[in-house]
Length: 73
Image (cartoon, rainbow, N blue to C red; front, side):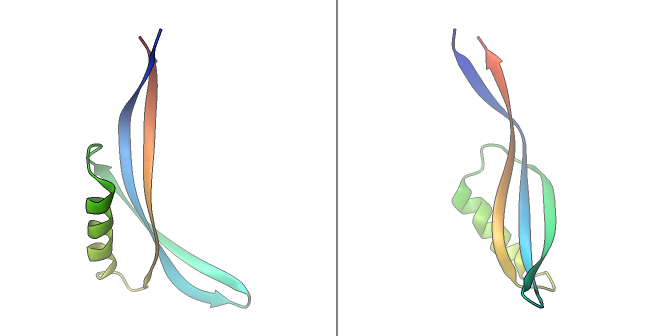
């Protein structure tokens, strides 16, 4: 029996640099839902860079969040 993975939910998370609080880094985040599962990482990163230009804080990190359904066939 083979186990296959099915991408069900993909989200784009922008982590933004909120500055420093003493020695602690402050991270603000924005999450965008309903990303097409078949989108390439390079394309998703380009979208993230474009969206970061609309934010108040500078871009710190880009994350791709995936929920994957494992199915036994």
